[in-house]
Image (cartoon, rainbow over all chains, first blue to last red; front, side, top):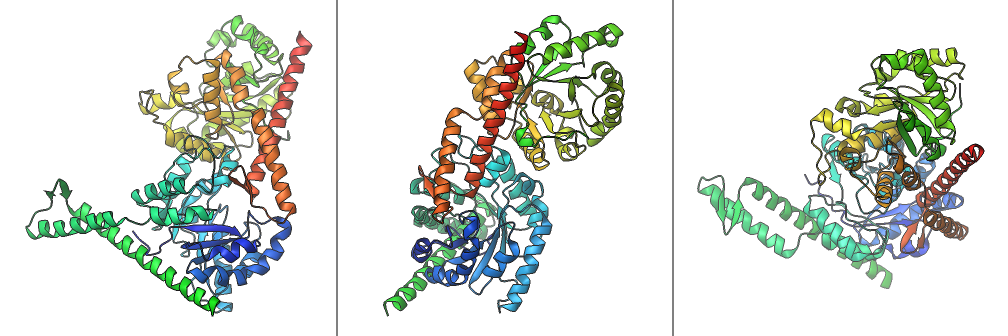
Length: 313
Length: 312
């Protein structure tokens, strides 16, 4: 189930805002999205493109993966400005057809070759944000091997396309999210999704809410976060990482399952808990995920320490 | 061909279904303020299609339109040619076609509509088709149905009929149609067609609701993506017109959103914090949509008021 990638938290920021970009590496994100799309005014886009290459190195100093969100209608210009060494993913917004993804894939392939990036290194995040995208979910999900995960189906663009208010007290996106999850599974991709939890205020900086959503997301088996405000980064990292207690319980479950298996039984009730292959598999998944999270945190700390050392030196 | 207005400007929030079996059903509807009135021809017996009945239908069309409503006729798939022949006259805007299971059901209607338009002096392409989906097959085939003709600009999910078709006994506390409803909304909007419905439990259990409650249910429908509803309850027209229109508060809020966003853009940023939320391009685009829709709704309401004024 796991792709091995740890992407619990991510901040999206306009690449033309130097204050955001310069501080981004200190936030502790697993990934950072440099935005050329909705947070950059049309008159600023040409200038913003000139900033991407340098910003990739800048925001990566804390060990975060670097992604760039391009514009749906400015694909060629934005990709030319964005596909440089250090880039991990291009987010393609408002994806509606497989043909669009195929085109993005082709251009990235050429740029990888021209710029010394290993072939196939740059992923494509196909952001489905319209009803038509949902209707074509499976063809989009299967359009390129660069797509490793798939999901979503909500957000401002989708609410606009459906003509619904964004912040209401029920989940108006349940069908679209479900379709994308199914398409992801059918295409053999990791699913990213979050459970619906009401946020009528629409606050993007509420850390408590971010933690509750992240924790519920992990308990449902999903593992990806992301947001717009630094306040949500730590709560997302925490909520999407198994707790020490959960790790301990998982270890005990595995130990018990080994004993049960050794005795020739398929399952047993041990200390009030049913222990069988299913519980054992869940415990293994949790331990594997905890280990990946630990490794990712260590990697970020080391990278950030080196950057601070270099800055101080 | 008739040039259709952009869908965002198609204001048909309330489509009141009216039986032709009694004068009482018809003679007061023009005062109610519905955006559209559908004269239900499904229940008319053979003698209801006589010359006298045709005259009655033509009179009803006139009555229904007094208040500025668009007038449509409702037919099932059976005996459709005779019913259209009896019901399509100048003043008719379209046909509400019930029991649609596939694109073929709509396609079979198209030559009849062309003939009727030519025969009755209507502009070519003037008659819309509003397919009503009330079966599992209809919901499953929604994409081909809404794509079957340019005449389709709205489609209706009939949740009560769908429950019956699927053997579902509606229960107040459980919503069995989340998937079907979502499928119709997404596929219709993807095709540029307005979906219409009042979701469970309103559509399935027909509860008695106060004006405030029906308005709340309409707002919920709007926030699921529906743009209006087809229904027979005359006292629901007012609250549902309001529910499917932007409120005064929304107009004020989104006017301010546009102002704040424009200031941000002038400063070189399209990510502007406002009241704890982040305003960026899609929020500004949505604000434009809400304000445009508010203007369209106000204009439609003005047209109807003027029509009523001419009669009183």
